[in-house]
Length: 383
Length: 203
View: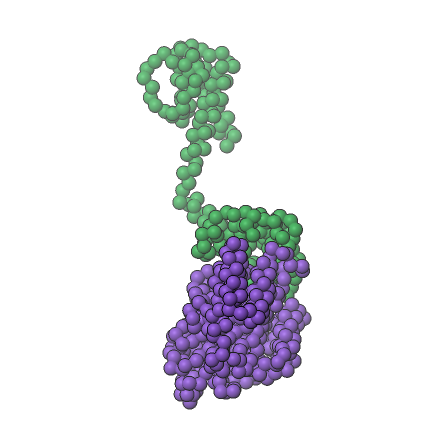
């Protein structure tokens, strides 16, 4: 599908901006100021984007060095929502595209995180297909579970294929934690739901009866056990060690009606508070979304299958909304991405949007309260 | 209904001939006029009246004129009747609410039903609570379709493309019900002011 010029202002802007950045190191200070002022004037005159997105370049330049060099990278793929291949080729195509992307990264990432919702309805065939597709990945793969993988058989098949749903590992001085953050109250026993009814109840995002996700609660004692494990796991880690937490649901409260929500988020955040550098990478929301609460930086992952609209309320203030996706382009608003872990323990996130320029969101942006290293703001509102 | 009006009409004509009254600047309303020489003709409801300025009280009108007066009286009666009928009852509003709710619920059902397509996908998967459907912006020139589209054209486009199904006929009740659901959902659940204002053509 050819792109219409009016729909791609954002890309044009991003290209212009990139050119501008490339040119900067070649300038001396006087030339730099001249160019910076001219670019701001042009931006204002065109009334296309706030002038500050060009003016930040000086701040970027000043902040180079001081631990901001990239120590290592890992990649992510998330929310593939696979059906059986014979039913739906569309999402298979998208998942394969992500695998190809990751395999083509140069240099290769140290590992790949899968962010959950491998399957659409938790079917064994869907999960097996997902495993088959992901087995094509060249780097090491770490798996996380999503609610679409879980609620047909409460994780039985997923655990058989991929192992424990929560665990931790250390990599190059960083402590990584993978959580099962999709635990909810038992809504199925009393109402005598079949496994498929339970699955479909959970799979509907706008289900008015939907239950909020938790890490440390949920049915039975599965949440309680995980929470205890998390406490003990963190007790072994020094407070200076950078921590990266993977959760399927956002580990904060965004929009309850769609379960963009973790009900005991504050309790998990409290466990992470003593640590100097904490980054949470989450799936489920299928959109560029980023947040900062206290010492924790949060980044949402893209889906390969489809983008969710931004929720009507509750969007974290630091998030810069992507333009609404073009429904005529299967891949628009979808993608995969990488995370740069810096020498100072911070992490930057790159959204590899398939039909757009990549979008980089840095820890510096979040920690400056959105004042520095501002990612490009789309020319058009999200709607 | 017709029979009722016909009976009324006959009564009026009979009244005219019996009382032998007449005129034409009709005035509606049932004020008890002061006694005058003008002919006043009252319909059988006892309220609707025609006051004839040019006919004296005891004059007998020619047939043609009497017919004209009768028609006027009937028209006045019907107009009043029509006005009164907008005072609907609680029962009426309950029925309308129930019917509207049923159509919206039918739309909700299809909006969440993958059977409109062939690959498992349903509308709500990309449009939770019908978000990002923008019913208030139609009709609009849909740049990718290269023509002016209505909301139903986009519903069908989604059924045909991402959902890989067959488009519904324009008068398919499922299509109508989904339109009803989408409009209702956006008007009630989208807090943004632009969702409350018709804005055809907006991109």
